[in-house]
Image (cartoon, rainbow, N blue to C red; front, side):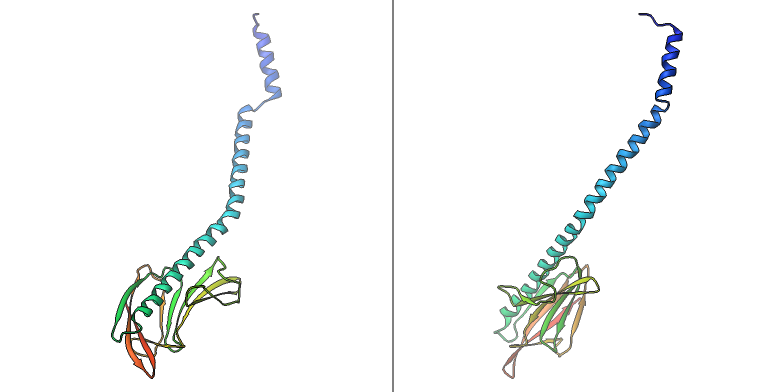
Length: 196
């Protein structure tokens, strides 16, 4: 069947009346689909990102526990032999560690944790270790505090004096030298030195 020019023009005119901006409609649909896709990704990230952040903090806390267990193990190795010393590397990427000579404790504080390691306000012992952990919440932020307490049988000193040493987070590891200085008043003296 052969169409004449008049019929072709009429068909084109009818198509333009029904769908005048076909190209514009394609772009509008594309933008709408793109916005829907971005909204879905945004909602997914809103739910997943806190879980990822919590898992990262949990991993960091577990590495910190391992580091404190290495310190405890080193102290146990040198405890019985006067003059014995060991050095170890301590990576402290987040938080701060206090060698508390006045109370004979080593305290590692991890601020702004998104992982609640223990029940808030309740200090618990980590089974199989000398460590205690406390999660505290202040002003909407959680701090995890790990403590090694030697007050019952060791006198901890820093640079052979009852002074405290606070180590801040650093990209470079600290070299800690732990030495048994001997027994004084029936209590073993364990001395810490930091080589920075």
